[in-house]
Length: 290
Image 1 (cartoon, rainbow, N blue to C red):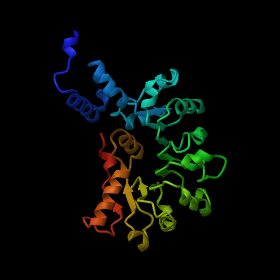
Image 2 (cartoon, rainbow, N blue to C red; image 1 turned 90 degrees about the horizontal axis):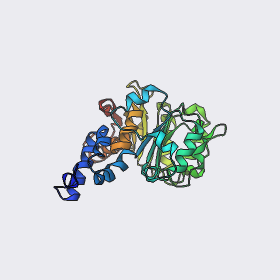
Image 3 (cartoon, helix red, strand yellow; image 1 turned 90 degrees about the vertical axis):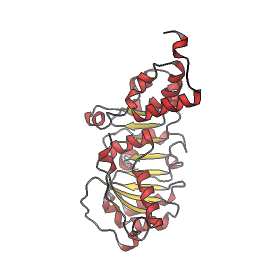
Image 4 (spheres, rainbow, N blue to C red; image 1 turned 135 degrees about the vertical axis):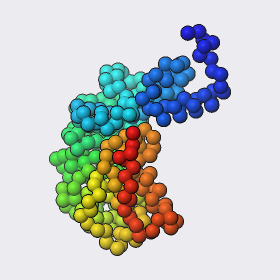
């Protein structure tokens, strides 16, 4: 193909917007879009590598994220530090080896959002990450700190604004959970079990900077009804999200996830568009994701 055949016919800024929009709307098209021209590759390649998934021996991960491109982990792991490593912003750890986790964290300096499944048993490397680097963390604290108790003064939490905890309430004494109030930048907190309702009022009082405190439920069955003091605090949301791993991946790729939906719901409660005492979000957008 001649150079003239790939010369832009549109203003470069407009052309870039069009290609990036195409990448967002049809993520799996990114590898093909990169073949159009070198300039297009420069625009799209950072989008292709922004989300990396490691340790996908479990087929359900591929199934739940099949409509979203995943960076080639083999390329990230096998090559020395290169520009593609700097593109990675979000990392999903399914069941990686400790060596792979260390390699990714050491080679990819811009990772700021990590989701680690409850079968990712090698998370100690996360505790060595540069202080303030992580902004979003979704994981089991038991696995992260094993065999020790969670230490919320640890530097891994220095920059955390969004924290989703996969553990059950009874995993640690209540005194341990009060340590969440010491996280200096925390604005969004979520649990996967409604048993935390018993301590959430105390957390809301102890954490005035919190904008969202959510119970993320995988089914509509509710074992506990929130006390009145919780219903009156618009920051508390019970949100339905049956496929929370897919929800994270969509948020990592598009910016829309249960956090943003909770923020919108809270805003509507504040303005009166939704009953201020209505804390349950019944609509589960995660099941409608591609």
